[in-house]
Length: 112
Length: 116
Image 1 (tube, each protein chain N blue to C red):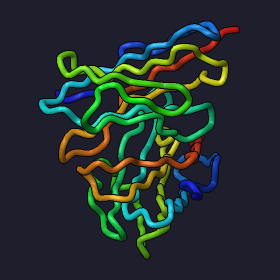
Image 2: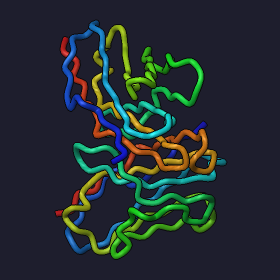
Image 3: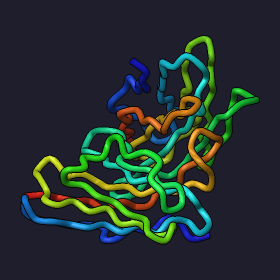
């Protein structure tokens, strides 16, 4: 079945450390790819998106993501996390001609 | 630019009662979406409107859920009667283009529903 997988349910990282969140998809063709962040009690905010072109995408809040076709992955990274980055992160894809599908999310906890 | 507005932000009802949620999309956005987000899961599409017409309502439980977008702007999602399993966050999103293209969806803050 076609799907979006975020293998890590919960990640804890120290403030100032690097962060990487994994996302894999299983669709035949390369879909459009998104990362959203959801802070507690808030809606989803778009961090970045990939449609085509350069496979390294820069987003807001210092985040970046790299599309790797060979691995069907679109991992999100941040070199140095801040306490305000504690939130839930969702990878989402739009296969050509289909609707937006979300992964189950990864909760990030930042410790001092 | 104002974002997607939703109200109420929180709602607590008893099972078998009815409830309605309201959404005002970003000005000029033709496409409007309603999602249901159950705790611990990603959002799931309930219904998609293009202007005031329904594009996709395949995941909408039509025996109890209904939605409308009469003038192609604001939208209302209704649940009648509510069940315990309807407890979730209901998210509204809008995008400037039709589905399948390079549109980006912008989300509102959501309405948290608790059914007791």
